[in-house]
Amino acid sequence: MKILLTGASGQLGRCFQDRLPEGWQLHAFGSAELDISNKSQVEEIVSSLKPDAIVNAAAYTAVDKAESEPEQAAKVNTQGPQNLALAARAVGAKLVHVSTDYVFDGQGNHPYLETDATNPLGVYGKTKLDGENAALAALPEAAVVRTAWVFSEYGNNFVKTMVKLAESRDALGIVSDQRGCPTYAGDLANALITLLKVEASGGIYHYGGDREVSWFEFADKIFDVAVAEGRLEKKPALTAMTTEQYPTPAKRPAYSVLDGEKIKSLGVALSDWDAALQDIIRKF
Ligand SMILES: NC(=O)c1ccc[n+]([C@@H]2O[C@H](COP(=O)([O-])OP(=O)(O)OC[C@H]3O[C@@H](n4cnc5c(N)ncnc54)[C@H](OP(=O)(O)O)[C@@H]3O)[C@@H](O)[C@H]2O)c1
Image (cartoon, rainbow, N blue to C red; front, side, top):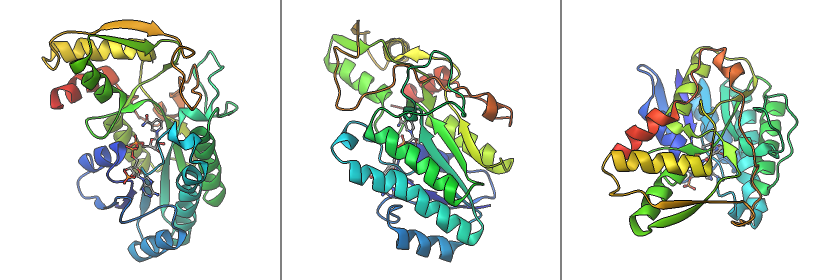
């Protein structure tokens, strides 16, 4: 299997490269080598490589910054997947594209199904939703995998931020009224590999952690593990905060748990994020 990977320097991109199955051939592109918003560059690279599959791990992921840069976010999150889907179609390649729980407004109280109504609250979620639709319109056989609360040993993420903050602060306030499922990018990478192996049919799939928490509960768990692993001397005092007390430029869904039954039926295990947390904190 010849794979073209975009966003190779991001969390998912790096985890995907670490897990490439034996015998698969990988052509990994960072944003400097392949800008997915550049249609002619995408066409040129895809048509010359003729991959069997494109894995799109590239995205504009700065949720708050997107509010003041909507055009740039749309170029990467909407035109990017459209460019990739059109180029994949032209060479007969599969496409696995990754999207987000932020396509939902978070007003639900049961895990979101792939068929549930979307209603993004901010620019990031809106541009990602438009990207899903653009990719599927150009290539209905594409697999679009929505995920959530991604962390890893690479890049910037909530786990790293918490551990770093605790090095200099004795007390932290953490939002406790937003709930979701943390997802280890390595598990997500394995899920994408399985989708390619089983030749999953086109459409949307939800993939996330196997247990829901609030950001407060997630932080509490991170500090327990960091202390147990000797990464922190002591746990900071934690105060639960409301979203209202911690305003951000982009609104975030209060409840964004994704129902993973559809992807599980293909033999994909949901992310055991508790186990991953121990592993990656050891690696920090
Ligand atoms: N992180 C999360 O919590 C989260 C939650 C839900 C869904 N997701 C989705 O999961 C996927 C993977 O996220 P991640 O956490 O791995 O993201 P990440 O670490 O921010 O990586 C994204 C990568 O995309 C690259 N990129 C940005 N603009 C590009 C462009 N125009 N062309 C090519 N590459 C470009 C970035 O490269 P530069 O650094 O060089 O700009 C970066 O390496 C994304 O689709 C994201 O929307 C993430």
